[in-house]
Image (cartoon, rainbow, N blue to C red):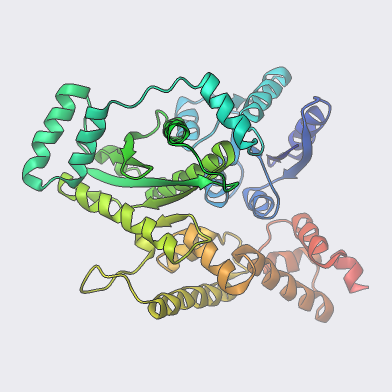
Length: 442
C-alpha cells in the first residue's frame, strides 16, 4: 500500500484531493495533508511517503524548493506538481528537478487519478524472489552488450595521460558520436556485489544483472543529464557526467546534492529491483578535461571507504579528509576523531538554531562542510537517533517547559520553537508526548 502526501496552502484543495483519492480504488495506505512546505518536510522526515503531490506556489517555500528538500531526504520519493500557472518555464524546472507530472489547476479528476495511477504503477514494492527475477530477466530482457570498442575507449579516456586524451576524445567523436566537452566533470561509480539473499550468481546471470543495472542508471539519468555510462572493471558501472558553462552556472540547485541523490537512487533501485548489494562512489566536480583522470580516481577512492563503513553505501569523495601533504588514507583514530568533531559541531549548531523555522539538514551539513547524506549517517551512528529526531526532541522539550512554566498561548509557543502553524505544532506535540498541549497544561 502506498502513502501519499498532499501539500497545498488552500485546505479545501487538500480535502478535495484526499476525498478523490480515498474513493478511487487505488491501493492507498495513508493520505497526509500539509499546508506549507515546512509542515510537509516534517511528514517526509517522519513518515514513509511514496508520492508527494504539491502546489508550486505556497508562501515562504515553493513547491520546487520543497521538491529539492524532499529529494535530499528521500531521493526515491515520486512527485507530481500542481499549479495554477500554465508556464513552460515552471514545468521545465519541475521536470528537471524530478517531477513525474505537471498538472494545471483547476484539476480534472480523471486526469489527476490517471497521473497518480501511472506514477504508482512504476513503483513496484519489494524485491522479488531471486530465481523468479532471473527467470523473468532471461525471458524478457534480450541483452545487447554495450559496444566493446566504445567501452574500451571510454575507459582509456579516464586513465590516459594528458597528451593522449585529445586523440581518444577525437576517436570517440568520430566512431560513436560521443562529445565530451565539459568543461565540468564528475564521475559516479557503482560497484555491484552479491545477491542479497547470499546466493552465488553464475557468470552469465551476473552479466545479465550488470546489464540490468546499467539500464537502471540510464533510466534514472534519462534526458535530463549529459552523461556517458559504461562497464568498468570488476562488476563496476562508471558514469561520466558533464556540464557546460551555462548548465553549471545555474545556481538554483546544489550540484553535489544532485549527484548524491543520483547515487542514493542508484543504490535504492538496484537493491529493490535486482536484489543486489552495491556501493556507490562519487567524485567531486572539477573543471577541465585534464582532470578526467582525477575524478575517475576520486570515485574509486570514495568506494574504498566502504571498507571502513560497512553499513553505509553511498560515498562522496569530498566528505573524507585525505592527508594534507599526501593522498594517504587517515588512520582509524584520525577518522574517529574527525567524525566525532563533525557530529559534535552539528549538535552545537542545532542547539543554537533548532527554533529557526527554515532549518534543514542541508544547512547543518553545509556548516560542517560535508554532504547531507554523510552527516545523516554519522549523526545516527554516533548518537543513536537521526538528526531530525534530535531537532524535534529539542523543540518538544522546550515547548513542554514553556507550557508548564509560562502563560504563553499555543500560537506563541509554536512560533518560539520553529513551527509555522499552531495546528501543525499540536500534531507533532501529540505524537511526541501522547497528549495535546492543552491536556498537558491541565
